[in-house]
Image (cartoon, rainbow, N blue to C red; front, side):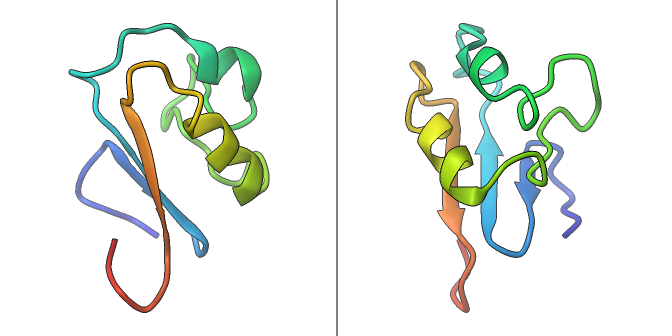
Length: 77
C-alpha cells in the first residue's frame, strides 16, 4: 500500500510510522531485525521482511518511541 508520507509504511496487516525527529539512532531495530529495518536501502522499512508479530515485538523495543504501529482493520489507523 502506497502512502504520500515517506515515514509511513503499510502492508495488508500493519501500518508502521517513523518519527525521525524523535529517533535517537540507537539502531536497535536495524541490529535486531535487519530484514525489516534496513539502514542502507530505500525504503528503509520492509514489512515483508518478517512476520507482523516479530515487527510489533521489535517496535515495542524502540528506546525513543520513534517507531509506532497500528494493525490494519476496517477502521483507519
